[in-house]
Image (cartoon, rainbow, N blue to C red; front, side):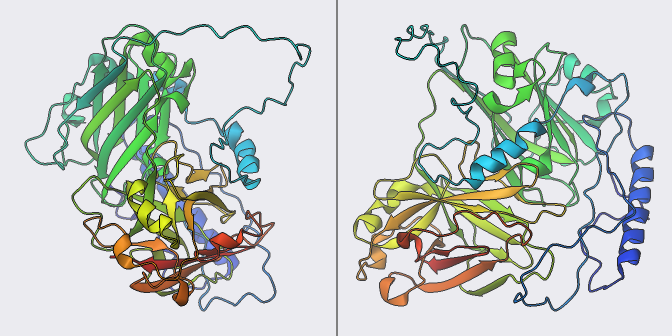
Length: 515
């Protein structure tokens, strides 16, 4: 909803204001009261209830190493994120719709902190050594039951045209079930595809015709925020006819929403519902409902169901420039790391492309086929690309850097594709960045061996000029990671990573422009 006159939506840190601890707390509490009043006056229908607990004590400061430089200006902790636009009535059926389970956070965090860095590592797998029944050791297990593929073996359904929000609006399949689950608001509050109107709902039902059960499912949604302050909008998915539960999330938690387009890839097999997963529910009901509120414009959606896993081409991220990722098959992705708040010592120098480095860090990437870089790797160049899939190109080795991000009101996020090993992890919102590393040491590799992608880009590397004659420009970014009980991994790295990263309690990445 629109912000009130007395509560403009903003996430600044009060300019250069250096107030006392008591003053900062008073400001925060006053904003919380104003926000609560605005929400109470807003529309009564919502997807989730968002509660902000205010305390009377200032959050404790993190521990700092003695040699850490003092920041030039003091800073306030960022405002709490706005609550959801509408309160959720006690009798609303949407109370059964829950977000991703939080109880896995500590397990996921601990698993990633171990930083095995091995291809095929899955932080969400169940550990077979826990409570394992060993009474059968030595016996041949019975064969797994045969599961036949559904018919058709792959099914793709599109909604809306992928036309970059061009008029005329494409009609959405708004059903009575979606309207009813939203509390039966009037017809005038619903948007179609491409609709630019804010403070509206979007609903679209996807009917499906197949037999059997699919093993894999992906929903792609291309959307953008209409006002720049759409931080509290939500998306909900549930199977047609399933009133027992669905899956819902704040859009800001799964996509970069800042006025630019965002492409969200949702793995339906990982989205938990009260009755299983979104995918298992769709297998039963043969239909999917999509609901978004209330400041988003939806360009198109695409649902893909398949019997076999999708081909996992080695998708990698190169460093984007301000010119973007061109008009081809490349897509844009970001990895935002909430760096240390107290006495922040972030730094940057030289060429870093469109990377944002201030008191936090955002790596802006273009996703491309990593096979295009095998020629340079095989010639012996030493550089790295961000891994956006579970496979690295031939000639590359996987390396993972786990960042222990800011613990106090963490705000890290990413827009990496679903299933990417580069991911924001757990309630502490730490970050695992996976890399595909070319480990050569040939100092005579030509720039011409790197691919022409149709747009300007860079890679990670270029620390030693004599080893990187292919680099047109070089630079670097220093990340001040969490100070208190820092759990960065690994604490030391293989020598073949030294051209693009230095590790420890903080992190330095080296960058090089190719085109």
